[in-house]
Length: 132
Image 1: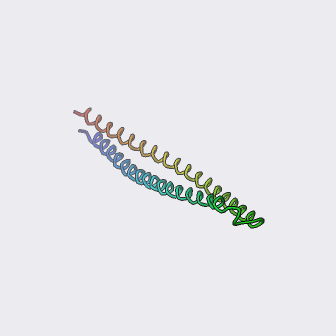
Image 2: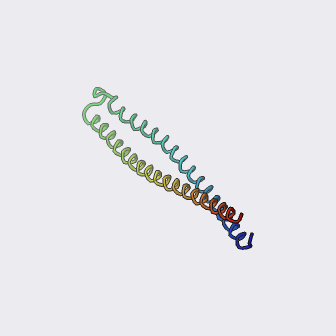
Image 3: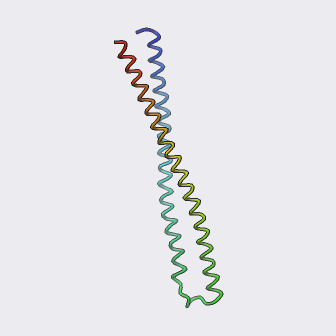
């Protein structure tokens, strides 16, 4: 085996090692993003339950308990609270969408790195095979 071939094989192996390290880091980041999404989904469910509870309060208290302006103020308070909750929910959903995009990008990155590693391994194998 010539010195140049040995250098090329060494360079390809080094590229594989670097790509493998990059893949490990990308995979770790992907797992972090996926775990964050799981946690956000749990929070989203809890938020929905809280919002449903607030909605029940408006209907649960009959008009017999509140009269006139007190009822009107209460209803307005609940409606304002629901509007704020909806604003927060919309922002939350926007952020979930952005997180989904980051996850998809990281999945693509890890796939591309693995593809590159595979191609480089095939190149090394073919180079070695051609020397036999």
